[in-house]
Image 1 (tube, rainbow, N blue to C red):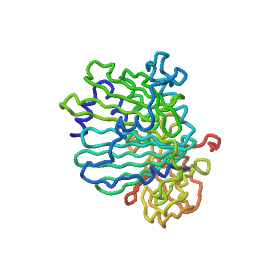
Image 2 (cartoon, one colour; image 1 turned 135 degrees about the vertical axis):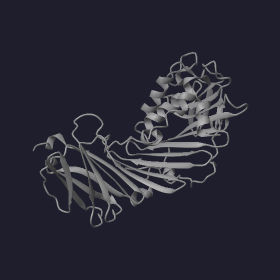
Image 3 (cartoon, one colour; image 1 turned 60 degrees about the vertical axis):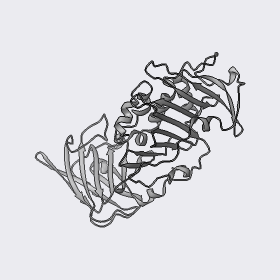
Length: 395
């Protein structure tokens, strides 16, 4: 089944929430950093955790008190406010080490997504494994407060991206995981008539089980949803099975599971293999500094494009050749070792601005407003953005 057919089939009711969030353009948990399946032209994947195996692992009891009901559940045991439940989940996990795994599996194939962070929301790590009949694409991103390091693995091998500041082009599970995870978890509860179905004791903890056997949407012929939720609202597992409206007897299965015992152990090993380039304003904006702050050496003769735009508000990362006020090209000379830097100055004559690269720090006549440096060397692409810091913005 093609990916487009899968998405079209799930456009009924809850499916809109479950499948549309993914598309656009420190430390990490060790259980996630090396979890990259080798791409092939087949669509094999890790087996899906089914509803029965997830929710029944432990000891089930029909006994549950109103005091144990998670946020959003009314005194009669009915989930009446799914937004309150989702907010409680993310509030409770915001400052805890956690790894959320989400799976969707039409027919025999499966797409897997993960989002993990430590005691703070950054740095975080994301993982995406998507496939159709011919292509499998694995994406991983390690995001700090200022930089993102991404590896994409497909039929043509590895490709890497180093970004500075919030460049969010790409697959949303990778670039905006919290928003996407919130969206997908909402989808489990949005269209089901969930009610309390007892408790489950697992690993010394008590979870409230919610189940739904019909949808609030008339065009969904069958609905099978289950979730295990802690009394404070943390969703530890959720499963949903929906029929494909176009194929008789075929179902789409979704699952989400939360691991709060992750071993947070550092950036993925491949991050150290990339040059950690960073661009900043120096000389009160009269020069750009391009520095290798760590990782691998940038080889000699690396070429970059420089885009400059005078903007004080808006998305400063959204600068391209087509909308820039000035553009130019620079090429490094010697290799740029970790700790080394080169400098860019500009010169305007009439209506044209040219840029020059220097090995030593120097003050140019041109004053940069917001600048973006874009380059590609071998299989590594760089997108680095900086704006002038107001406290230093004096001529």
